[in-house]
Image (cartoon, rainbow, N blue to C red):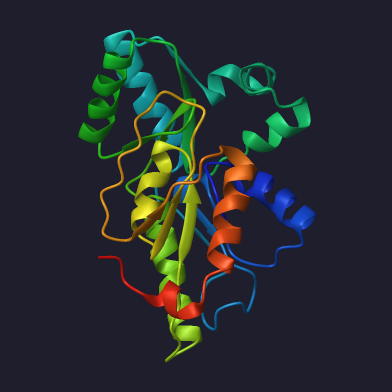
Length: 233
């Protein structure tokens, strides 16, 4: 399953390229898309109750009150998003089709980012750190969406032993990594410390990106099933 800070429009494009007909978690858990009839009785699309408009309003208030030096996606516009991310204009358009999150390019001191996060928490919102952006959203996350999906899989296949594996490389992945049986902590190209507070099994491949992803998954697939079922000590 694709679980990302990217939008549903972006992830659906990847899913088509990869021929994946499975649920998609977009915008750090703000959007959960499930194919029709994939899970009996489950709604095909669930989104956060916090609209992008409300997020932008809270962001403007905090920025005006504290003179934060930052730029939200809606302020950058698609040309600015393309410049900041390296995407082309069509990709930037898909990246800007957001339902329940607002990425923020932080240009201020790191200590001021902590203050901004507290401002958002005081407004009943949530702010998570990705590799390059702060992501403003409602009180939800990748971990919430993944737990919902795992519960649905358990209901779909009663009595079966299911093993969940998550792979991530950014601070916004930590909740998801802690919520699965096996976490793969891939080296990220950022300066943020990745501290995983979890009792689950943790793999740390040596390589970043797809190479590390492949290294970890090939290692897991080579293990006997009995070993995968063991709970870490």
